[in-house]
Length: 172
Length: 172
Image (cartoon, rainbow over all chains, first blue to last red; front, side, top):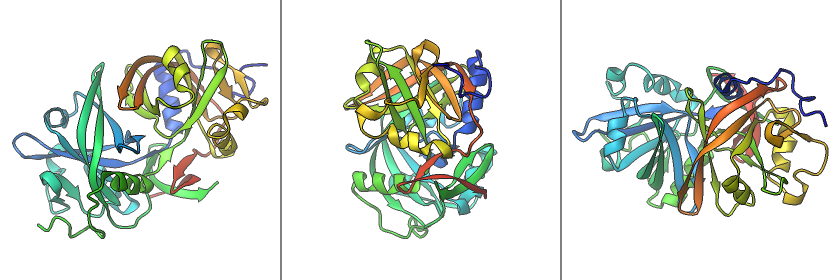
């Protein structure tokens, strides 16, 4: 068998380029993850790395850079709130990936369980207890066990794909 | 502030139910991950847990159960092929989550770098060197460094959302 007969472009020997091109073809769901600093200030960020790890016990993972502004809070706290975003809260996903000092300025959120910030209008939120923080180079894989949560407002799921926010389309 | 004013349904005190409901609202990109057993036989499975960990060096994670048929191969090998799926290869995503003995029966794949099975028609593939396997309960978080790859055929990305395969829709 010709091992590349079905591939249009020559292989990229460069892992960085291969990674970039492949992830551009990949679509990801968008969440916002929030926590509190040890002083009780809200921190949060938009992420496309939420993944299910197990349903029983309910475990999930997300990834972050240890250079991220929220990392000291995530490193020190036991609790995070993971919020699935919908098309109508696209502006909140953008805000939570924008200027740090403006992320919690306003009435677009309210404290939920453990005082964790819950954004208005999210399609669901889950409270995760951090059970592992696995360092990898300058990054960390955070493992949470989901302890409680709620469904929010019905809305189309929010995707990030090809450098744009989108909603899911037709079944294929 | 009323901490639940924006939530339609009462919180789920049950983490399993909260996890299930939230992930049903979350959309995920679909990949197929393949490897070789120590005897050289192909193994593979469909996954929605691929996540970017870092761009430099290019690192990604995926999650699996240690009860999975492919786990002994993933536990023993250094290499995996991660393939982003498109709408036209939905049938291959279904096949790679179906009956184990039929997953590689046919001419829908060919050996690529390191002999790893590459499926025909995928939108891209990446070769990942396994750099960490983090056990969590009966599961494992696998960390790979991307070493090479290629773009495949242009196609709509394949999503899994609300128990159906979909393609991305309009920008929002």
